[in-house]
Length: 391
Image (cartoon, rainbow, N blue to C red):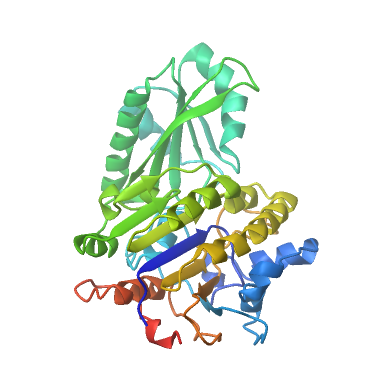
């Protein structure tokens, strides 16, 4: 069965149980969704009807209207880039440095960054919320002139400066230089370097104004092969933060809000096109990184309410795939992602049977399935298509 349009929804930060190698990552016992459900009585009727909750124990459910399974992580590392690479069929052979357990960056790295930028480094912290650092250090930064360094993810170096202190173009230039440095010095090779400018003049008023992500060695992606067929590859959200802009035909910016993102998605569904639409929902992961279980629960219920509208908009020859990039267990003390299996929901009006699909050995099986649908056989992906399992 082939589909004219595929809508891939990546709801970031939903894990459904520890991966087989979780112990290697000090993540034994993690289970993002279960631990949220244990702490809050969530009402998720629409996601449940798609088999979402059934992925927790891979139980059979006769009331489900979609195919469902789980996907195991296979790429090395649990940082955001490694997870997105795997979702798009790209093997990660590099070991990205993870500073989250250190709580600070190494002295040797600080010295090199000060030499690269000619600015004194302040901050040097691993934290949950990027807004926290500018409100804490913004006034000091303005008074003395400096560069704020921090990380809010497993494998990132993040720098920020006030627009009056370092112009945005110069800040981005520093970030690119830092990225090149980390590629050469394997002690500090991270998945991403992120630069953010901000404005405001006192605590409580500082706000980020612009942001750019610099990625190491952006690889090819099967979506380029879809584009060669004169089909669309539309990105809503932050796909381009992980893969090149050349991998899509259209980029639609969306705020981190679930509702804003779903509205952008529905606008695209209403348009006539053939190809792939990739939508990233980031708000859940943001709540997870702040360990805000009540906000996380609210956002999940908020998303559930929007599901019927989304399904009703789909045509018969559309395929909807809902998955996640990684877990982010709110019950774990450490900041960052957790090594977990992720849910995979597959829905189409053309599917006559709803079934439990075989467990996917890698999230790249999703990439292989999409590539298979568009008859892409000249692209190497380490996943296996499950397109023939859809009935």
